[in-house]
Image (cartoon, rainbow, N blue to C red; front, side, top):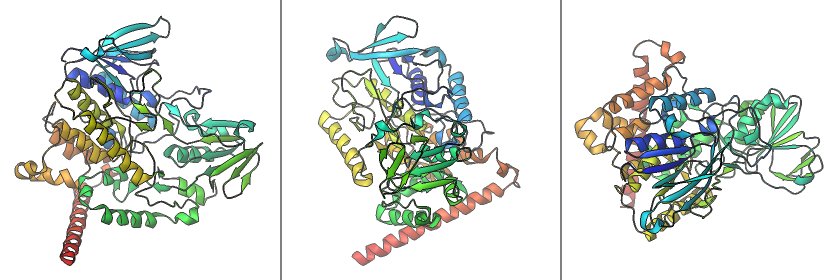
Length: 534
């Protein structure tokens, strides 16, 4: 398939890495972007659309939920002076720099909407696609492509619930996609509905300006700070050694840790689900204090509207609410696919969360159609690398029956753990699965023999993206150095950079010793239990 043309729909995070990876693989990418700028959801636009079911929009005051080293692509780092948790403008600038570094913009057709993607009449023989597009000031036109990558992601359409009496509510109703800044709610009474990251952000950003802010949660939420101990929480969680601990040990440890953070009942947000099984986990550093100071008031689940009155599940109510903001999430939307190729919105049928298994030829891929407790960028990059190897027939797919069984297995696992039918993944486990499939995952045992220091970091340090450039296709000679440098780069640019030489190393030694001690305790416990059973 070398030299053949690939249509890429969307120039956001997934689309940019798709262009770059196509060029690496000797393919000809053509990217269609409906707006005039690259960056997807990271493009800030003060203009708010009137449709609450529109795509996600970035808001002023947003801070990322994942640190810069974990959200960077595997071969392109954030600048060292950027703080560990970048602001929205830092992230957008990163993607602009990425596009400039690899000369991607010339492959993007801006202000161009993809109207329809259909199989060509000879699809059964060729696997090709007809892509119909329309520029903002032109007529529709069609082109033939050898493959298609759908990169519009999971945040294409806001989910707006419909409660009894909602249509008669005379005040304002918005979705989180329409929120831009808290100043827009000056001297108003606001009700935020939801237990997501954005719901928490909207509540705290509005609380400094609004007359009163309420947040309605049906079953509470587990609120996790960005920093836990001496390391960003997402870096601490996404380490491979955790996969070695059986769930019957790890799950109680997580429960104990979360219960020790806050008095959830006193805050009024106690969830009935264990944190390992909850779909309501919110990254937020300020909301607990806003609740404790009375700036944000927690209410139970919303039940119905009566005129300007909002009534909750516990029978309490609010009068004269000026605005209800739904932080209730998003669904994917692919109106250009007239045939149901990907499956339904929350019941996607994608092998490895990438390839539609029912196609006669695997020449279409969905990139970024997952919900992750980690960064989307590195996962999308691995999905693209995997999809292109499938397109080029360098990775062989199993039978249709086996692919459908894999789809079912992943769905059932999520339903069993979280009670929802969503394409949820644990980033380290899933990323390693993709990397292994394309030969880009280093072998721990080989590292143990050739590079013991790196072998230690493989399991006992965060799974930073440069690991996927150590071996395999398009590996990089500087990958080892970048892996070992990631933690220092992560903390560069904040006050810690002024500590005495060697202080950071001592912190790393403390973390290493603590991790080894935990592992030894776990192994001793497993040995004891095994001895008792035998």
